Image 1 (tube, rainbow, N blue to C red):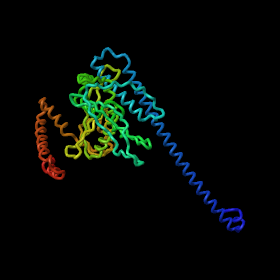
Image 2: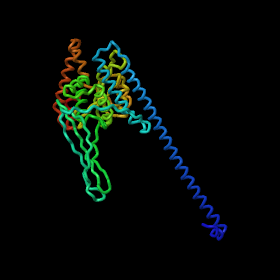
Image 3: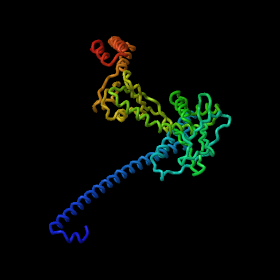
Image 4: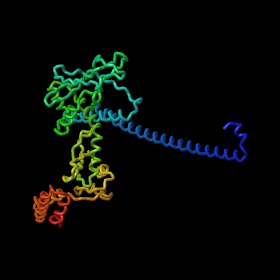
Length: 399
């Protein structure tokens, strides 16, 4: 509205116009304040996330420095060569896992440029399997036919039980003669980006170590006999990186188990050799499993340095189902938080068997016989539906 128009307005109209302007200004002020509050909230959230990442980086950096100090410090003469070999494998795997986590957390501009070691060429006498990757369409966007001008070749080390083979990934380069446009098929995703091993070799490495209990120093010798020299430190790094990549899968398995109404749990002691200590420490592996009647047949393993009940509570979290376990006192706090206790019949039977073997109780034989009858009923109803199984238990197994 210009000055001439304002001059034509009456006093009442000017007052009404001024009121409207004040309402608009008030609305714009509130909107600006709301936007400022949102921006301040976003800034605070970003600061909090940055502090958490910085704390995580400092924690991982400290652990990495500690492991490196132990690895390169003078070894204790009280440890045997075999013990030191196993300890080196664990240290190398942990160092590689920590470095991989740090690379994922650190901002790209803060990441330090690592000095890449020069990779040895793969033995020429290994059989080669060529896999050609070409674009799906060799027609340029301008309408011209692309011309192949070369190719990029990268070699991956694969493993077939008993022998190695090299995968040659050949990616053709296609260029348009009119607009000089160059295209190339992308490289398939790899577990270790730009690394030497294929997924098949990594799967064999993990399977041999954790399922077949074959230490890395033995696998090193096996690979050397097959014609490829792979050091234990390299194998340990691959194991550590694979552990980081498999963590989401383990977390997904745990979350899936925590959706089940009934779980079994038991802890098993395992000896653990602490870095920098010449004595073994008793650690524990906790197994969380679904029931045999569940459609999901899965087990989640959790390692802990001790047997405290807090390790079980950390895994179970807010879960409120029925827990089948022994009478270990560490589970009692879980039952106070809403979890229903189901006593394990196998553990109860074990106590009666111990009494019967020592001849300290005649009642123990009767208890074992009654439990055997319950086992026989469970064997009969194993393949039935839930409702049918419940009805038979109520009529034949209920006290």
